[in-house]
Length: 229
Image (tube, rainbow, N blue to C red; front, side):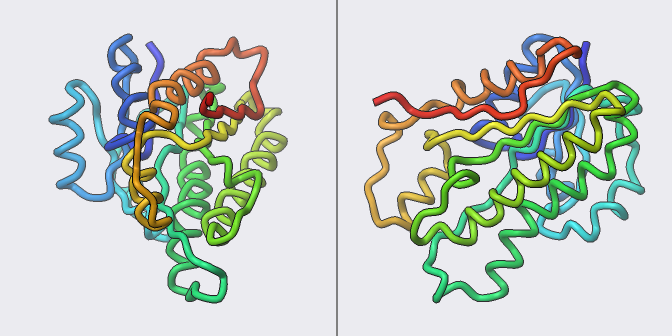
């Protein structure tokens, strides 16, 4: 039985991945922003445990984790949580930049740092669920793409640094996926949302499982997943 820590388990890709891992008997620790959300996650995903800390405030994660008891070994740390804001560069304030970068880049970096001892003990894997915006930046996607380009750089550096410790690092770049975040994106774009046009979260979750389940003598570094049609 493997042990995994997952952020963003409350919806979309993270929720589907959580269901799939629980169904096969893995031990899950779900990251929640507060105690109320943690209670909701435990009730929704029977058998899962929770850790609490606000990813919007990465500078407080060390303090939050220091008052809890995470697992001694972690086979997989999966970063699924994220936020999106669309606007032209000329409209973006420092507050927006700081909030998006904090949630999408600084928080994953800090949480990974804090859990590295447990990942090293298990020779585990870190999986960053990135985005197509981590490879290309389009108009109005500047702040989000910057956070995801940064996440790609974080993964590449981490992979090289942790190879001597046996920790694998994979980045998954999903295209548009039928999730609540995608609904918000369509609202910001001023377009009608039709989930049938996009990939299902199940498809992306299966890709994450592939990275987690690969034998420990190999790693997948980067995976692009796109809708067909």
